[in-house]
Amino acid sequence: MAAKGGHQLSQSPRFPAEVWEHIFKFATHVPCTLVPELYEKSECIGDQRSALETALVTKRNLVLVCKWWQHMAMRYLYRVVLIRTGRDILALDHTLRNYAAGNGSFAGMRSPGHWTRRLDIILDLSNESECEDPDHCVKRLAGVIQFLPKLEIVSFAITGDLGSEPNIMPFSVLDALRSSAKSLCILDWSRYNFFPQLHQLEELLRDLPNLRVLRCPELVWADGIIPSSILSSLTTLAVDRLVERMGHPGEGVSHEACVSLREFVYYCNYLELPREFIIRYGEYLTTVEWCSANSPCFDKGLDLLHNSCPNLDRLIFSLPSFFSHQYHLAPLEKWPLPRVSYIGVKSTALTFQELFRFLAHLRKTVSTLRVLQLIRRWAVEELVHWSSQVSTEATMKNLNESPFRVEDDEGNLLSDRLLGRSKPIH
Image 1 (cartoon, rainbow, N blue to C red):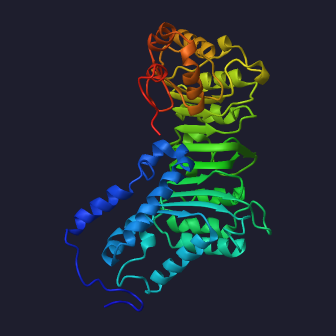
Image 2 (cartoon, rainbow, N blue to C red; image 1 turned 45 degrees about the vertical axis):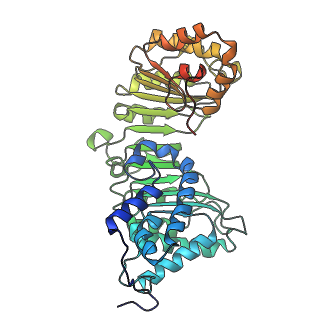
Image 3 (tube, rainbow, N blue to C red; image 1 turned 45 degrees about the horizontal axis):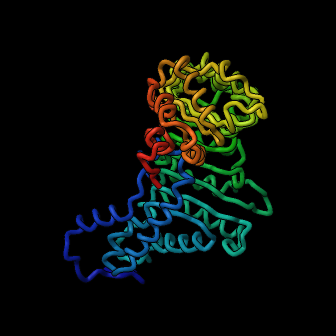
């Protein structure tokens, strides 16, 4: 029997439900946006939102066809939830509360919030056209999160702030994440806005036993030690800076705890790598990404990684240029590059002369290297633009005679791209 205000389905589809489910899944799938695939692409969370918005349009079109399609496609519509305006929050809150009260659109159907695995909140609190009453929206947001008990991925990209507590996430929103404590695997803050107080964040992290990826502006560490309750599950830590707090009791030393950390991303481009952190946890790290632009201590950071990270296999770093005196970089010959199999370079300006010199340096100093990748698309496109001024012989000699692959931003051979044999994938 239908619940009050619900709808009964009087006829079945012509094809088996399993066939329709495959169709809906194929039509709405966006690669590498859910667990476990996203573990390897977690740095791309923000870049994925355009594709997710396109998929959302398809999902909404599916559920509008008829009641049967709405019923069957509901789980795909709610699997990834994007909140872009205050109206999105209020509408979602209304729907989830109706299902909780037994007044959902379909009789006997569980709340669609049980199917939600990823929540992205892209909200501008200062834009009145998107969020007329920020305080009210934030209160409703906490309620929405509580109605999503199986979240695996939560990403906050909120601009603007609440007048009462600028830039600080209200505790009610942070506390609501505990409703998904057992399932939450990836937690992401891309901005300082709407970021929780550090001691409240630390308390929450202790209650997330399966958290694998944490990306946030700041994280407290005490006496040079990240709480062991966090590192026992965390494999990727990405921060702008670490805030040291002395005298924190009861953590012991790192070798006494299980440490799962393998990847460290340091976004702060005007500070040295956190020396004590690298020394303490370097033995566990296999991947390090360092946004090291404007750093006069780049060579010292490489030396620290070389001496403290014996298992390092992948190194990604950002530099405006390899040889610019403007940034006070040490000469290339003094770069003590670690013995890794992969180097990814995020350079915003790169000439053929600089690239060829860097390749020659790598051939001499990093015998373990298997792949060098130029990650910045515009840097690759700049090389493509000027490729006609470099002889084919020089290009082939420098790129293809190395013992390692030289790749463009899409993972193709850079030589093929420069010689017009392949086109970038958009």
